[in-house]
Image (tube, rainbow, N blue to C red; front, side, top):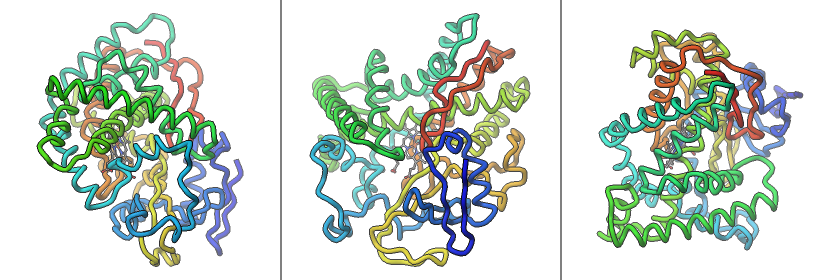
Length: 409
Ligand code: HEM
């Protein structure tokens, strides 16, 4: 892997598609952070912030936003016309809470947040534990892939259940979601775009059919709650309802699968003694935070500059993008001692793995509960769990995880 950095111009050259980088990006982050918390990354074509203080602050800074078209036109930004072959994807994206700024974001977020209050999330604990135990019961005697048999089904089935999507749809949800999130990777191709568009069209059509069914016979699921909000005139349009359901179904598993896979891998590779931790809720919660700091699943999010401004001595123009490297912040030596060690007893494992500010992950309480339950059940039931073979890292950087993690129980 070649990392070149010029301390005078703060220009960084590093190919994000180089497997040596995305298999283990932390050495490159450390190399950058040893010089500077902010650099112009040539291959990404934008200023990137790596330091904990900077990322944590800028995520909350209203000079930057996920949306720009509310304060600028496409012509002003020099953007080309929307692509016809991504219109279904763009339609879903355009109404997604993640892609909006206030006041639309505030309204959508308030509706969704109700579903994730701690009381509702906590009620899922026995369901997650039962599911985790059922999955362990089905582990084979020979080595198997933990991502397929454990890390994937837990978050997928739980979020499907929350939304009231039948369990048999899980494989289809995964396929649609994978095709859609590929749009956020580096080096997007025409093929990636057309697949994502088709997935978005099919997913939206499916959700519309489900909405019609739930309108006729409402349940106690989140989709029925959102439909009621729409019908009671709480200003949720049908397009927003569809986008919100798709966002929750996708975001509800993509990152958690990898957070869980990464955590199990880190625990096994670093030989963390789990016998005491699995019987101590506070210790388990600390281990989960430490693993989110140490091996976070999402490494990069971007923001638009909403008006000309100056930040860290850099002149930023309205409409340009900056990148916040969430994956680097937990390794910042300015706030952590021994950041490259996985220390389950670390008093304050600070990280930005769930973001910060108005877009802070709405599913964080659910993700934390899933991680705690899944790790507890796994290591209680399989105290002899060992790695067999070398894990297969995913062919991506933004979504940092493993395609497969072979273990023996
Ligand atoms: C370990 C697992 C997870 C991680 C690391 C994670 C991380 C994140 C991050 C970093 C953001 C902010 C993105 C930004 O600022 O641009 C975010 C937003 C979001 N996440 Fe998560 N997430 C996880 C699990 C979940 C789950 C389980 C759900 C849903 C059930 C969920 C739903 C969402 C939603 C809806 C947003 C958008 C919030 C907004 O824009 O206001 N996430 N997540």
